[in-house]
Image: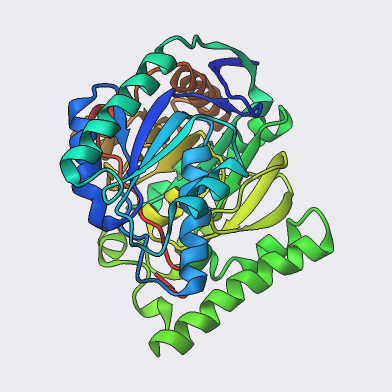
Length: 387
C-alpha cells in the first residue's frame, strides 16, 4: 500500500509540507507571530520555553523542539531568538541538524536591531522558504514509512469497547505492513502493566514496560503525596461512565492492538525502528501528542468518547469516537465514528479497513477536522513533571 507524501533530504517522508516559524524563547514570540501574519503559507510553532530552565529540562526541551522541526511534515523552519536567552542559536542548529538536513534558519532580535528589523529579516527568509516548498510535489511512498501516533482523551466506555478496539485493529494492520505505531500515556497504563509485560518482543522489553508503569505510580505518590487513582479517571470520565483507573487503562491499551512491543522510547525520542513501540510520556494529551510527533510521527489517531477538538500544528490529528451521540453532536470536530461495532451494523475489521482508507487519504492531503478548526497546540512536558 502507498500514500502520497513528500520526501525529505535525509530520506524521511512527510504528509504535510510546512514552513514553520518558531520563537527560540518565549520573549521573541511576538516577533515570530508578526512574521507568520505577514507571510501566508507559514505555520507558527509556539514555544513557551528557551530560558530559565534546569539543565535537564533544557536538554529535554531541545530534544522535543528539534524533533518537531525535524519531523517529515516540515519542509523548512525559521527560528526567531532574542539573543540573551539560555538556548542559543548553536544549540538549536546542532539539535535539529543532527536529525534532519532540511532548510533551517535562525535570526535574533538583538542582532537585527530590534523587533522591526527581526520581522523584516524573517519575512524575507520565510517568504523564500514558502516559495521553495511550493515547488515540491507529492510522490508515492510505501506505507511502511508511516509513523502513526495513538492517543485518547475525553474517554467514555465506548472508547474501550469500540473506538480503541477498532484503532487497535488498524494498529495491527499497519505493523503487519511494516509501518510504525507508537502508544504512550504511561500513567494511564497503571493497572494494565502485567498485560504489557506479556507483550514485549523479549522478556527484557516486557520488564521495562512493567517497571516504567510502576515507576510512574511511585513517582506521582512521592512528588505529590497523593494516589493518582484519586484524580484519574477525571470528573468527565466518571460522569461518562468510567469507574476506576484500571478500567480506563484496560481500554486505553486496546489502541495498540495485539502485536508485540519492539521497545520503549523516552518522551520525544526520535523513532528509528519499525513495528509497535511504547513512548514513556505524560497522560496530558497536549504533552503526549507533542512528544510523539517530536519522535517522528506524521499522523495522530486520537480516540474520544465525549469529544475533544485538540490538534497539532505539525501533524494531522484524526479524531475517532465510538459514541454515536458524540459523533452527531460534535460532528465538526470528529472525523470517524466506530459505533457501528456496538450496534452490530459493521464488524471491527470492516471499520478498521475504513479507518485505514481515511488515514491514507489524510496522508495524501485530506484535512482533518482539527486542521480545519486550526486547533493545533504544542506543549513540552518537563522531565520532572508527573502531569
